Length: 387
Image (cartoon, rainbow, N blue to C red; front, side):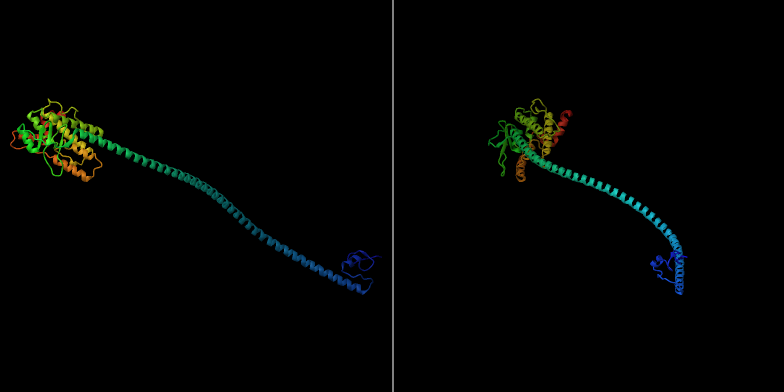
């Protein structure tokens, strides 16, 4: 009968089959006897050993599986924790991303606003530079215009001053005194000659007074008293001598017209307007003459104040004397020293003298010579509507 291999139970021709022998477990042995049994026991022992090792390995595998299951549970818990952490971190990342996005949007918005502000500031700076350049050009043009205006105003001032001086010279021409011997026709004229050092000769009042520092001058054509008061004129009016007052009437009329023309030229306001024909009527009473003279005095004083004559230089009791101050004020070239000299020279001729107390009409003459009484006389002797 055919033998079978104890290992693989395959048919064999020897104790072990060729495949088992080629596996390296057994040596190819031919024959029978006790050696085979030993070999078989050894093989069986080895098989049992391998079986024990396999069982031990299975136990180890089971233990490993149990440990793996334990570890897998802990890993699951840890994984859950990690997942939770990951979800929290993801939420944090989303919040952070949203915050960063919002911050980016805000930064872009702020940057846009800053750019717009810088653009506006740049444009405003350009506009400011243009405005300042325009202002500088306007200032330069203004300075040029002011210079031209000043030159034109200076020319106008000089022209007006020349016109004023020419007008004053026409109304009050001054020439050197002509020596003459005045006739004394009445006691009043004699007293006037003694008190005022004036005389009426051939239609002119001549000043015979002499001063050491000023040349002797007289006012002629139209003739007025050289000291520019109207005491002699009022004395002649009170005496009723109208023929001798004709030239003085003409001079006062010219003075009135000159004052009105100067007021028109200088755009000044006169408080007491007078007609241009004032002092020319021969039928006016003494009160009307006094009223007109008081108005003329007021107009002259106001005109002097408006044209810059110092108030301390304006004589309260003067009428025509204040007109002579205008020529000094209208002269811009005069320095204060020369102006004071001119005013001092004029002040010597602007004093009002008093007549002798032996005169027959001394009371009337005092009332007429006192300029502060002119308004009271005119108010009492004339209609108040003249004011």
